[in-house]
Image 1 (cartoon, rainbow, N blue to C red):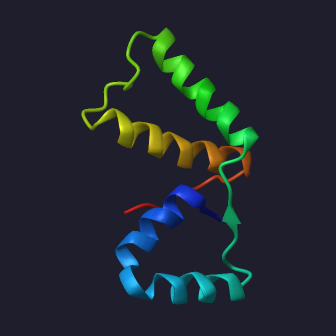
Image 2: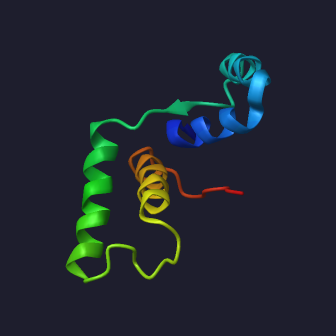
Amino acid sequence: MVPTPALSEYLVRAGDAGAQYQAEMSKHSVFRIADFDIRAAVETAAMIRQSLDAGDKKSGLKTGWHQIKFDRQIIAIARVEGVNRICSN
């Protein structure tokens, strides 16, 4: 499962070959693109609310707020899709 926010990051790095990579991924059943949909939005909101309620919206992370929100979207997509392992670089 490839969350759409992660796909976006991948395509930025792919440069001119991005369209070709995306087409190739679409051909293979091993890749499934998962959207940031309503369920993922609700999950993301719950994660952010939990952090705010704990008094630290960044959950102790030292990176920028926009990156944290982006990463939480990826995690939320994975959660609602039932993923039990995330590979990241």
